[in-house]
Image (cartoon, rainbow over all chains, first blue to last red; front, side):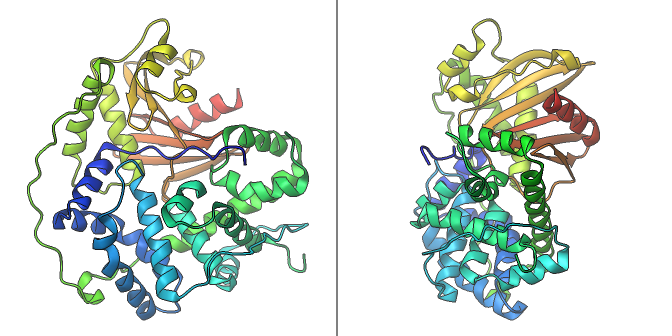
Length: 174
Length: 250
């Protein structure tokens, strides 16, 4: 692409929180955790076979949170920093492969799926593409920003997004 | 630049996320309007994304406490002081002070992106130094607004009178209108991720409208062409959805 999509806006309260996180304020960490634990847990639980596995995954992410936030930037949206922490943390904890060689299966036909079908197809996605799709769905960061914050390839992030999206709606046999 | 069908199909998931450069997004919008079959396939992506969103929402339940993760709770919350106001310049000084006041007042509420929209609505409707008058786009650009966001949409046909504009953090704007004695705000940002939890959703052509309610206020957000717009006011969410729908269809 000729130029990336523009990044999200940053609220004043977010910038202030990141300043405090960089200083290592425990109360700031508590505030961050309180605000974002729900979305982060949703991704962890969705990437796990059961609650116990999800708790272990979340614990692994939380253990790194304090160290991670010391290097977060005030000029980057907080939700994207959280998303990057989730992406790299889950990949590490679950030992997922790097995003590489992903191609989106472009179906000739697509169908509207109901929730049970969506759930079944989501669970059958390769975990590395499922992770990108779920984090994208929950935090909605531009791929360019996600790539910058994770060090992953923007093209592969977009390919994973498209791969997951079309896999969910491909007509059977298409 | 034009895209073939395969390229369009590859772009659609990113278009749904509002994550395409403006020019590309506009071309995809045109293709969706002109190709019913492509539009039908796009709709399947919209539906599956919403269903997966609801699955994620359900997965949020019963968040583990820190003790369950094997960690002690962090220390007690410490009283914070409001940081000194930065030197934003005359055009931003009043707006920044009001934003600080509103931000400090709402620190205890969940800091979702949507709460930020309502916070900005409050700040804009209370700001005494809104920018207005001839040459407004140039004035906004001089105040640090991104050129492609330096707009004050004309809603006079729908009865909304322009009051003025306030630059907001991130290079966007909050445009304040008045109708029947009430103030409404149209916020325009570079594409902003929104949560999955709108109170109402409505599809208008290729654009998905998300409606949010907070007490007697409502806000409607939508993304198109690399921009996110938010229309807010003290009105039922259905009323604001109707205004935005009419504007998009005009």
